[in-house]
Length: 330
Picture 1 (cartoon, helix red, strand yellow):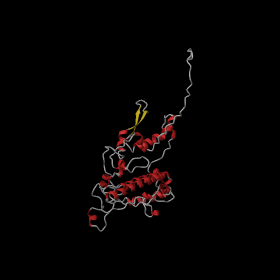
Picture 2: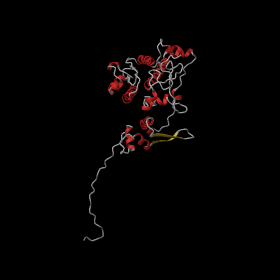
Picture 3: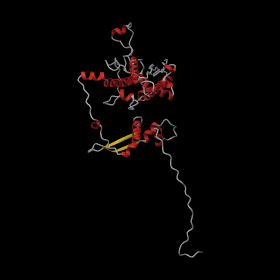
Picture 4: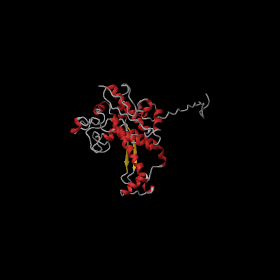
């Protein structure tokens, strides 16, 4: 089966090269020129590398999503261009108007099986069996993966395939789904449209539109909305540490943060952080068979630097001869 090269997040100025060919400096420069943030570009780059490995090792068809991030200096116009391009790329593939199957109700080309991508017909089940990229592509803000957000039932927690729609974000549901690259682009599209709606509602025209619909904005003092923080002042210096723990706990099951709530005051009286060495050993099982990983190895992989041991100063004790009192010298 012939491979189809992956072009997700292509950069035209780089000779149609993908993001996986850019260095960290080039990625940082690209994030300052358009609508996409540096974290979103990193997620795209990771998706490209994962799909490239699938194509090379398994010789299976992978999607080719030629999305070119806008480099317009105005963030609002860059976002609008990205939304327009993303909607164009996420439209389900249709049959030709001259195809007789289109006139008997089979308008869309890939709308028969639930595991097929409605855009390129990619077999998503084969991708999941090899390497579940849905679980590796995460949101840059919440840390939740595409698998948790779109392929998991929020009520039962069971696996449930994402169902695409005819008009991308609305319209009738189809039978097919989106491959990892198209689903990530769909996720970014939803975020861009939400940001665009918030900006539009804060404008003068947006406020007039809401007033015509009978919706008015009431200003509430911040003191009434802001919740009182009872955290002692000397504990605020540990906030970056706990923020890092919360992010790492979403990536590994070996870290658990437990809160014990007071039944009377409804506050967290006790907070415990648990490092499970057994789970760390399972996750670090790719190392040498004769090597037993320790808790320090797991903590080191999370980016936490260990403190250097203090070197005790050696003090030479001078032996002072003592003469017993009350005894005559020999």
